[in-house]
Image 1: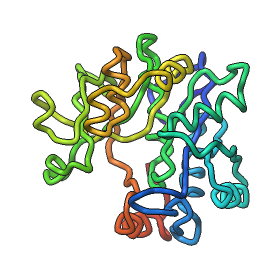
Image 2: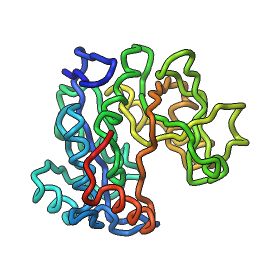
Image 3: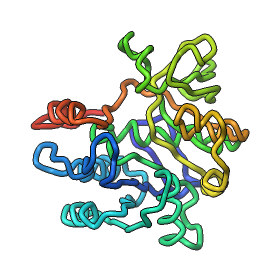
Length: 260
């Protein structure tokens, strides 16, 4: 059961768990889960942010014993997974099925292991779209603050129907704005909250043609007719994909109080 402090949301009918997929074999930044930020491995920072959000139990799902040791040394819970998974969603599904075979957790938050600067309140906000029973998957977006981001293919853009509020429905996602209808466009934040049946459905679907072309997993859900709800938050939390990103994360987190 979940009640978010500081949000206009009270969801007392769900029982969420946060799963953080991580692996050492990143092609762009091998070993990045254990890259040090302010003296601690990045994956430990991510685990702490998730715990601070107060959503529910937090489990790191990883295939590498080195990651498991780092999280356990910090007091966190880890479950080892197979090394064959094509995506983080497949990894968390394996772990979820093993640790909760009876389905007690009916909502699964998938938090990437390379987002050490995400604010706990922003993370908890991903649950808000699930107040709509038609929403299968929820995610986050933020305004595009830098015009250079609009043409940057590494920045995933979202087209969202918000109506008059901060919660809306995803219409489309793309890396290049020319592939989206007229905006405004938003910076997509790679955090997802799945209803449990939706996660089961999602990992059982074949990749869609657009997912393969653009490398965007969420297009599989949209292209199959699944509804993705979206919560707008104020700022984009830095994700660490390169050593340069790590340096920026160090500057954000080192010796500074956490802000949401």
